[in-house]
Figure 1 (cartoon, helix red, strand yellow):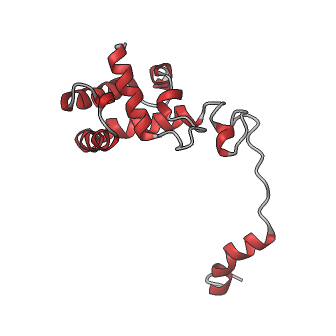
Figure 2 (cartoon, helix red, strand yellow; figure 1 turned 180 degrees about the vertical axis):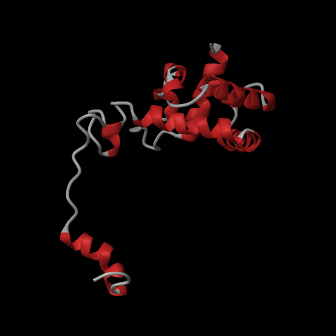
Figure 3 (cartoon, rainbow, N blue to C red; figure 1 turned 120 degrees about the vertical axis):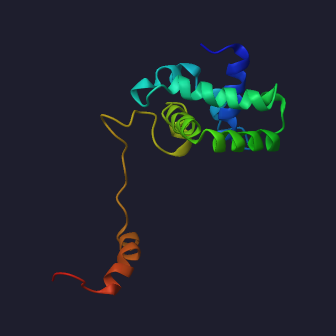
Length: 148
């Protein structure tokens, strides 16, 4: 489906969308989101592979070796491609996030457990009464607007 060179470019794009943490504890999306995810993403979008092909073609039209560029140059190219193909680029971003944050080895790095969201769901702690009071204070101060 994609050549080795295209997979390298796709990985570099993913690393710009979701970069690794400076300390290296959290990997970038290029190291985690496999091309297989995009190939199987038809359940989330119409023709995800075609959309990614359009983004890859846009990047390739602007440079021979996207992966070898420094970060500011890659970001500039991605901004142009995003402007020229906004729907395809937006789909790539959405699928990159889905693929990245659904990985069981990634979720614990951000707080949620490694178990899937469904069917069991995450344990969500109750908000403290102080937090609820602080969040609802502006509404309570406004007074009643409709019914008693």
